[in-house]
Image (cartoon, rainbow, N blue to C red; front, side, top):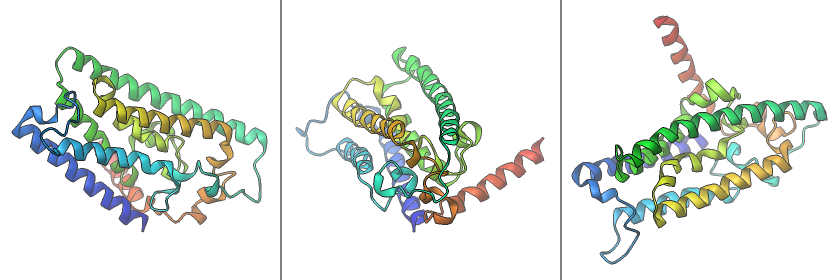
Length: 247
């Protein structure tokens, strides 16, 4: 069921991205968001895009069953204490390892996007292209969930998205290019994304046991109902074989 939901969401995101590319090719200025969201000339595609991104983020404030347990594990209702509780040393060791990996992701992601910011402020990239990049990240987010995540494989090393330390960083990640554009469209979305990641990090700091599969039964394979790994694992095998064949 969860695979179908996430696959449908991916299709919708791809459609939105392709529509944005079509608008860009036809009229580059149609993706300029610094002009605001005035309804003077009626409802435009940018209004719909803003609503789509807004609803996507707002939905994360609620423990809905249509999202992965990996996204909902910060909620108390999704915590089920393990019968064999881990020791304080085990939890602290896990926290240290996860935080180290998360810091690496932060450095890689925002370091890389700092280059994007430089290209934007030096006029190499336009405002419209920054919006397209944000939508590219928007699509890439679900590709990472369903098929292959380089951050998971190369840095986080977590078993799956359900146990991912940074699952709810996705909103601030796809909003990253919008940070540099001064407009209500961009900064309203960035503000909500920052609230989401701040809430996630506070909950992780306050209740780390909710995020640790060694202390939360709901994050263990035998209790998982998401089954998102069914699509991701075959992809890993194919990539592994391709790399072996190349080298």
